[in-house]
Image 1: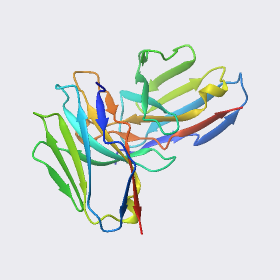
Image 2 (image 1 turned 180 degrees about the horizontal axis):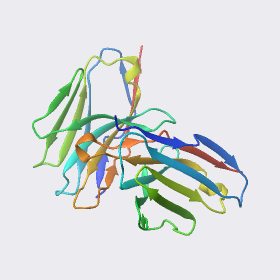
Image 3 (image 1 turned 90 degrees about the horizontal axis):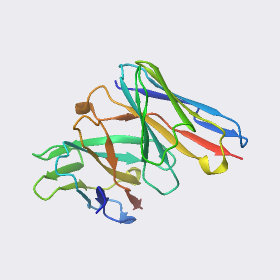
Length: 111
Length: 115
């Protein structure tokens, strides 16, 4: 089993649609979780951290289920500018400081 | 805050030459920085962990003599691709963090093309 697995893409959705991305991780000792956004040929940029209680930032909602080792990202009212690749990122801690990246899910929001 | 600067943004070099990439934390100190490589349509793969004042830790399969890392100060890490070959052509990105609660910030990346 891969350490961090994401929904295969691409997701092609119309403007205004709601889209959800899922991610599972294999290391039950993982400590922190993030969603990053990466535009084509650019570096990843932090979109939001994911907390056990769930968190929301405008149109974006992230959820974490530690029991199922599952993370989700919900985007409401999709905009054209949301088109990008979304990376699920897990921080394993335990002194390693390493981030483990999922392969990413490509989102294309179409007019 | 938490700005990471990476230079150059892109470089084209001839086979056999060496290329140095710089990664700087501009508004925080970073005892640890990370170097990643990303091939087209692939996820970021960690190459090595750069530790200030000590040797870097390389991931399995990454040649430490080919990818030289120096982290001489709390704000600067460099990656030197020695004797570059076309298969080294890739997108190299560094990252650092002032603390995990802030997440990790990435440099803008360096697109290396070896001809």
